[in-house]
Picture 1 (cartoon, rainbow, N blue to C red):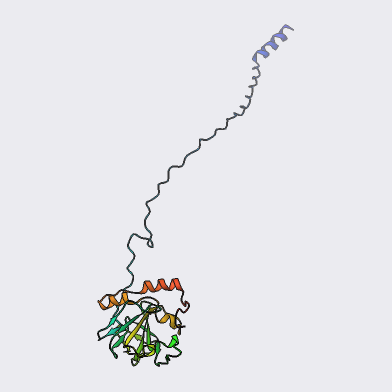
Picture 2 (cartoon, rainbow, N blue to C red):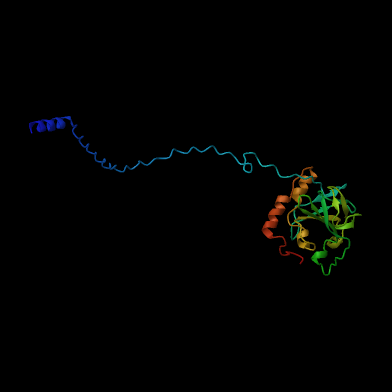
Length: 241
C-alpha cells in the first residue's frame, strides 16, 4: 500500500499543472465626444477688378454727325431776302426773273408742279405755289421752291440731283402773280404726296441761307427733326386751308 501511495505521488508530481485561463479583456466602452460648434468663417473680401469701358460706352468721344455740302438756292444772280414770312415759316428770296433755282443739297426730286392753276378768287392753298419743285436731300430734309417761271428740263419725281443742279427759273407763278419775281423757299420733313401745308415750310430758312451764302454748311436737320417730333408727321393745316 505504501508503495502504491508513493507511486501516485510521483505521478502527480510529474503531471504539469493545467494552464490558467487568461481573462478576456472587456471591450473598451465607446468614447462619447462632445459635439464641437465650428466658428463661423468670414469669407475673404472680394477684390473686384477695375471697371473697363465696354466698346459701346467707351471713353472715346462719339463720332461727329455726318456733314453735308450746301449751296445757296439761287445761283448766278444777286438775291435778297428777309427774316420774316406771313402765316407760316418760309423765306421769299427776291431776284430777277429767269435766275436759276438750284438744289441746295444732293438728293432726289420729290414733287413737281408743271402747271399754274392758281385763281385769285378761290385762292386755294394747294395751288398758291404755282410751278414748283421739291427735293428730299441726303440729309433727310425736304426743300421746296415755288412761283417758278418754268421747271428745268429733265426734272421729274425720283430724279437724282446734285447740290447746285438747276431745278427751274424764278418767276411769278401762283399767288406771286403781280408781285416782284421771287422764290418761295420752304424747309420741312418728307411726307406723302399732297401734304402741301407741310411742304411749303415748317422751320425758318434764313439762318441756313445766311450760312450757305457765306460758304458754310449749317444743316437744318436737327431743327426739322425736332419740329416734326413736336408737331407730328402730318399736323393740322394752319393757313389757306
